[in-house]
Image (tube, rainbow, N blue to C red; front, side, top):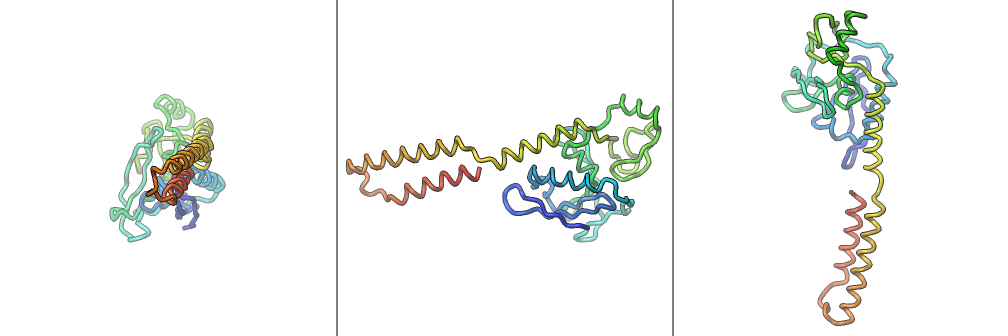
Length: 226
Protein backbone atom coordinates (compact mmCIF):
# COMPACT_ATOMS: atom_id res chain seq x y z
CA UNK A 1 0.00 0.00 0.00
CA UNK A 2 1.03 3.59 -0.66
CA UNK A 3 1.52 5.82 2.39
CA UNK A 4 0.27 9.40 2.26
CA UNK A 5 0.64 12.02 4.99
CA UNK A 6 -2.14 14.42 5.93
CA UNK A 7 -2.35 17.11 8.59
CA UNK A 8 -3.96 16.03 11.87
CA UNK A 9 -6.72 18.17 13.45
CA UNK A 10 -4.94 18.95 16.71
CA UNK A 11 -1.26 18.58 15.79
CA UNK A 12 1.07 16.29 13.88
CA UNK A 13 0.20 14.10 10.93
CA UNK A 14 -2.10 11.27 9.96
CA UNK A 15 -0.39 8.65 7.76
CA UNK A 16 -2.93 6.74 5.67
CA UNK A 17 -2.29 3.54 3.73
CA UNK A 18 -3.83 3.73 0.25
CA UNK A 19 -4.20 1.00 -2.35
CA UNK A 20 -5.05 2.46 -5.76
CA UNK A 21 -5.50 -0.88 -7.61
CA UNK A 22 -8.15 -2.07 -5.11
CA UNK A 23 -9.31 1.52 -4.41
CA UNK A 24 -9.09 1.10 -0.67
CA UNK A 25 -7.94 3.02 2.41
CA UNK A 26 -6.68 1.61 5.69
CA UNK A 27 -7.39 3.84 8.69
CA UNK A 28 -5.67 3.09 11.97
CA UNK A 29 -8.01 3.55 14.93
CA UNK A 30 -9.90 6.91 14.71
CA UNK A 31 -7.75 8.28 11.87
CA UNK A 32 -10.78 8.89 9.64
CA UNK A 33 -12.07 11.59 12.03
CA UNK A 34 -8.64 13.08 12.77
CA UNK A 35 -7.91 14.41 9.27
CA UNK A 36 -8.30 18.17 8.84
CA UNK A 37 -10.96 19.47 6.38
CA UNK A 38 -8.11 20.49 4.09
CA UNK A 39 -6.70 16.96 4.33
CA UNK A 40 -10.06 15.48 3.30
CA UNK A 41 -10.08 17.74 0.22
CA UNK A 42 -6.50 16.67 -0.56
CA UNK A 43 -7.46 13.01 -0.22
CA UNK A 44 -10.50 13.47 -2.46
CA UNK A 45 -8.29 15.07 -5.12
CA UNK A 46 -5.90 12.11 -4.85
CA UNK A 47 -8.77 9.65 -5.29
CA UNK A 48 -10.03 11.66 -8.25
CA UNK A 49 -6.57 11.65 -9.87
CA UNK A 50 -6.54 7.81 -9.80
CA UNK A 51 -10.17 7.28 -10.83
CA UNK A 52 -9.25 5.77 -14.21
CA UNK A 53 -6.53 3.42 -12.92
CA UNK A 54 -6.76 -0.34 -13.41
CA UNK A 55 -8.87 -1.91 -10.69
CA UNK A 56 -8.49 -5.32 -9.10
CA UNK A 57 -11.04 -7.18 -6.94
CA UNK A 58 -10.78 -7.09 -3.17
CA UNK A 59 -9.35 -10.08 -1.36
CA UNK A 60 -11.84 -12.49 0.15
CA UNK A 61 -11.59 -12.51 3.07
CA UNK A 62 -10.05 -9.15 3.86
CA UNK A 63 -7.43 -9.30 6.60
CA UNK A 64 -5.98 -6.73 9.00
CA UNK A 65 -2.56 -5.49 7.81
CA UNK A 66 -1.44 -5.26 11.47
CA UNK A 67 -2.42 -8.66 12.89
CA UNK A 68 -3.62 -10.60 9.81
CA UNK A 69 -6.96 -11.50 11.42
CA UNK A 70 -10.09 -11.55 9.27
CA UNK A 71 -11.86 -8.19 9.12
CA UNK A 72 -15.50 -7.93 10.16
CA UNK A 73 -17.96 -6.19 7.84
CA UNK A 74 -19.74 -3.19 9.35
CA UNK A 75 -22.37 -0.65 8.33
CA UNK A 76 -22.69 2.89 9.65
CA UNK A 77 -24.70 6.07 9.04
CA UNK A 78 -22.85 9.04 7.55
CA UNK A 79 -23.01 12.39 9.32
CA UNK A 80 -24.62 14.03 6.29
CA UNK A 81 -27.05 11.20 5.52
CA UNK A 82 -26.84 7.82 3.84
CA UNK A 83 -25.13 4.60 4.88
CA UNK A 84 -21.59 3.46 4.23
CA UNK A 85 -19.88 0.16 4.86
CA UNK A 86 -16.38 -0.80 5.93
CA UNK A 87 -14.40 -3.73 7.36
CA UNK A 88 -12.92 -3.41 10.84
CA UNK A 89 -10.33 -5.29 12.87
CA UNK A 90 -11.72 -7.01 15.96
CA UNK A 91 -8.45 -6.19 17.75
CA UNK A 92 -9.20 -2.47 17.17
CA UNK A 93 -6.21 -1.91 14.92
CA UNK A 94 -8.33 0.04 12.45
CA UNK A 95 -10.64 -0.34 9.49
CA UNK A 96 -10.56 -0.78 5.72
CA UNK A 97 -12.91 1.18 3.45
CA UNK A 98 -13.12 1.63 -0.29
CA UNK A 99 -12.73 5.01 -1.97
CA UNK A 100 -16.44 4.99 -2.88
CA UNK A 101 -17.55 4.31 0.69
CA UNK A 102 -15.20 7.00 2.01
CA UNK A 103 -16.81 9.49 -0.35
CA UNK A 104 -20.26 8.47 0.90
CA UNK A 105 -19.08 8.90 4.50
CA UNK A 106 -17.77 12.41 3.79
CA UNK A 107 -20.81 13.52 1.76
CA UNK A 108 -19.33 13.55 -1.77
CA UNK A 109 -21.74 10.87 -2.95
CA UNK A 110 -25.49 10.66 -2.45
CA UNK A 111 -27.65 7.57 -2.39
CA UNK A 112 -30.31 7.07 -5.02
CA UNK A 113 -33.96 7.20 -4.06
CA UNK A 114 -36.24 4.26 -4.90
CA UNK A 115 -37.78 6.27 -7.76
CA UNK A 116 -34.34 7.06 -9.22
CA UNK A 117 -33.28 3.40 -8.96
CA UNK A 118 -36.46 2.29 -10.76
CA UNK A 119 -35.88 4.84 -13.53
CA UNK A 120 -32.25 3.77 -13.87
CA UNK A 121 -33.22 0.07 -13.94
CA UNK A 122 -35.36 0.62 -17.04
CA UNK A 123 -32.36 2.07 -18.87
CA UNK A 124 -29.42 -0.10 -17.84
CA UNK A 125 -30.62 -3.02 -15.68
CA UNK A 126 -27.35 -4.00 -14.02
CA UNK A 127 -24.50 -1.98 -12.48
CA UNK A 128 -21.35 -2.71 -10.51
CA UNK A 129 -21.28 -2.05 -6.77
CA UNK A 130 -19.17 0.97 -5.89
CA UNK A 131 -18.21 -0.74 -2.65
CA UNK A 132 -16.89 -4.14 -3.74
CA UNK A 133 -17.30 -4.22 -7.53
CA UNK A 134 -19.86 -7.06 -7.57
CA UNK A 135 -22.65 -6.90 -10.18
CA UNK A 136 -26.01 -5.62 -8.91
CA UNK A 137 -29.25 -6.20 -10.82
CA UNK A 138 -31.06 -3.01 -9.84
CA UNK A 139 -34.27 -4.37 -11.38
CA UNK A 140 -34.40 -6.73 -8.40
CA UNK A 141 -32.13 -5.26 -5.73
CA UNK A 142 -31.66 -1.79 -4.24
CA UNK A 143 -28.39 -2.74 -2.51
CA UNK A 144 -25.41 -4.97 -3.27
CA UNK A 145 -26.20 -8.59 -2.44
CA UNK A 146 -22.54 -9.22 -1.57
CA UNK A 147 -21.54 -6.33 0.75
CA UNK A 148 -24.96 -4.67 1.23
CA UNK A 149 -23.69 -1.29 -0.01
CA UNK A 150 -26.55 1.02 -1.00
CA UNK A 151 -26.68 2.17 -4.60
CA UNK A 152 -25.09 5.61 -4.87
CA UNK A 153 -23.94 8.04 -7.53
CA UNK A 154 -21.29 10.73 -7.74
CA UNK A 155 -23.62 13.72 -7.87
CA UNK A 156 -21.87 16.93 -9.07
CA UNK A 157 -24.03 19.08 -6.78
CA UNK A 158 -23.20 16.82 -3.80
CA UNK A 159 -19.48 17.12 -4.63
CA UNK A 160 -19.73 20.93 -4.84
CA UNK A 161 -21.60 21.14 -1.53
CA UNK A 162 -19.14 18.81 0.22
CA UNK A 163 -16.11 20.68 -1.12
CA UNK A 164 -17.61 24.02 -0.07
CA UNK A 165 -18.35 22.63 3.40
CA UNK A 166 -14.81 21.33 3.92
CA UNK A 167 -13.23 24.48 2.45
CA UNK A 168 -15.23 26.68 4.84
CA UNK A 169 -14.28 24.43 7.77
CA UNK A 170 -10.61 24.66 6.78
CA UNK A 171 -10.78 28.46 6.55
CA UNK A 172 -12.37 28.63 10.01
CA UNK A 173 -9.72 26.26 11.37
CA UNK A 174 -6.74 28.16 9.97
CA UNK A 175 -7.94 31.77 10.28
CA UNK A 176 -7.16 33.58 13.51
CA UNK A 177 -9.94 35.53 15.16
CA UNK A 178 -8.47 39.04 14.82
CA UNK A 179 -11.35 40.69 16.70
CA UNK A 180 -10.99 38.33 19.66
CA UNK A 181 -7.24 38.91 19.70
CA UNK A 182 -7.82 42.67 19.63
CA UNK A 183 -10.24 42.40 22.54
CA UNK A 184 -7.65 40.39 24.47
CA UNK A 185 -5.00 43.06 23.87
CA UNK A 186 -7.39 45.83 24.98
CA UNK A 187 -8.30 43.85 28.08
CA UNK A 188 -4.60 43.29 28.80
CA UNK A 189 -3.90 47.03 28.51
CA UNK A 190 -6.75 47.76 30.90
CA UNK A 191 -5.25 45.28 33.38
CA UNK A 192 -1.88 47.00 33.07
CA UNK A 193 -3.48 50.40 33.69
CA UNK A 194 -5.38 49.09 36.68
CA UNK A 195 -2.20 47.55 38.04
CA UNK A 196 -0.31 50.83 37.70
CA UNK A 197 -3.07 52.72 39.49
CA UNK A 198 -3.27 50.22 42.31
CA UNK A 199 0.50 50.08 42.62
CA UNK A 200 0.66 53.83 42.96
CA UNK A 201 -1.99 53.61 45.66
CA UNK A 202 0.13 50.98 47.46
CA UNK A 203 -2.60 48.33 47.61
CA UNK A 204 -0.92 45.43 45.79
CA UNK A 205 2.66 45.49 47.10
CA UNK A 206 2.64 41.72 47.44
CA UNK A 207 1.56 41.03 43.83
CA UNK A 208 4.29 39.78 41.47
CA UNK A 209 4.54 41.67 38.16
CA UNK A 210 5.56 38.47 36.43
CA UNK A 211 2.22 36.88 37.25
CA UNK A 212 0.27 39.45 35.24
CA UNK A 213 2.67 39.24 32.32
CA UNK A 214 2.49 35.45 32.21
CA UNK A 215 -1.30 35.51 32.47
CA UNK A 216 -1.51 37.99 29.60
CA UNK A 217 0.81 35.97 27.36
CA UNK A 218 -1.08 32.79 28.17
CA UNK A 219 -4.43 34.44 27.33
CA UNK A 220 -3.25 35.56 23.89
CA UNK A 221 -1.61 32.16 23.26
CA UNK A 222 -4.89 30.38 24.06
CA UNK A 223 -6.76 32.66 21.64
CA UNK A 224 -4.22 31.96 18.90
CA UNK A 225 -4.50 28.20 19.45
CA UNK A 226 -8.30 28.29 19.20
